[in-house]
Image 1: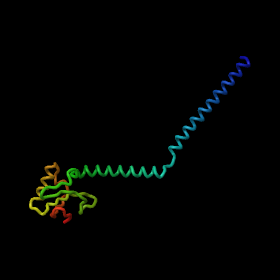
Image 2 (image 1 turned 60 degrees about the horizontal axis):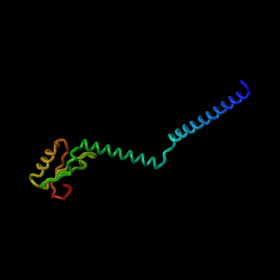
Image 3 (image 1 turned 180 degrees about the horizontal axis):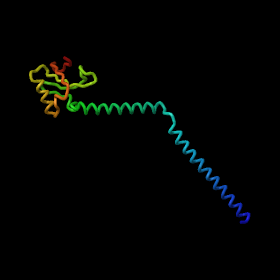
Image 4 (image 1 turned 45 degrees about the horizontal axis):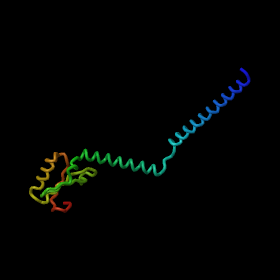
Length: 141
């Protein structure tokens, strides 16, 4: 090998080393950027958004659970000529729900309300039912 070929070989090696160093440097920057973003602290806006999403998800799950355990809400509120059926929190069992039947003080209102529940495909015995006898539009006993 003559001197010219040796010099050209040295130049090629230097180019390979130089470009290899550039590639390693670029890969290092990419890895640093990925790691930095993974460990980057969340901003308050990000934390607030995450809290809101968690609260919405919990609310949605609670609503689904409520509707599956107290599925009669699909038909409520409903009313007939001599009754009204609603639901609300049980006065006897805090945190649980009850069905409220207002028979408007009529003799057959209670039975008509129970018939309406049964004809809608629900068993009245599956629910806590609180009976009231108030004129239409009045709330409470």
